[in-house]
Image (cartoon, rainbow, N blue to C red; front, side):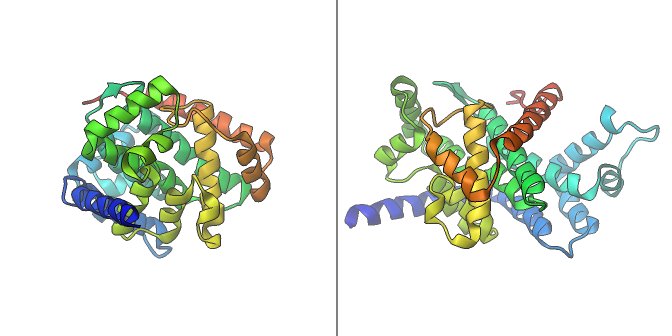
Length: 296
């Protein structure tokens, strides 16, 4: 029992470290964007106000609006114009992904791991989870997209705040072929999904988003009302690990468990393969656009 209390306290201390770091400024904007995503009454004006007070984010949105893809004779110089041109929903996704990306900055590459590859994996999972929601359930999947972007937050936190221990975990994972979770439990008494769940809980994000991230390795442990988004995230993560897209941190995967998840959501493997093909195509486009270059 004392050991469990110690693990909980260590996790709480880690969350405090995160929230007293530079991440707190990133968190504020992320939570504001997710609030807009979850508020059916939100408008382009709400999104504009968030973006305009964040110069790097505003620059990214304007850069996208003035890219060759959206080429116009007149240069776009205002956020409101960019939202009209790109579209409210697309700018929500763009703003969220660009802000989450800041957590992955200052890339390192060691023992097969890099933050840029982890970011690529996160983007792929986000796209896949969103497309599953839209194609299979006829829903927008905004929180599924956000969950995909943030589901590796715990790895980034361990990398940045428990760095020496994290490097040792990477070393053992590479040499012994073990899953990250197994080694994290041995080293810390908790794993990266636990870390992400604790941090995101402290940010007061929507319950279903936090639950999906916290339980996507063990969907049966979460609340039944969050089953669909949690299983969707588990499926998306599994496929992007298997493909592989970006950093693979679970070399050992349970194919029978994956099949059970598909059956529970009544998703056919063939339909899922079509969606995965589209995601891989989108990732290749993003690679050409420079989304995954090391800009450290």
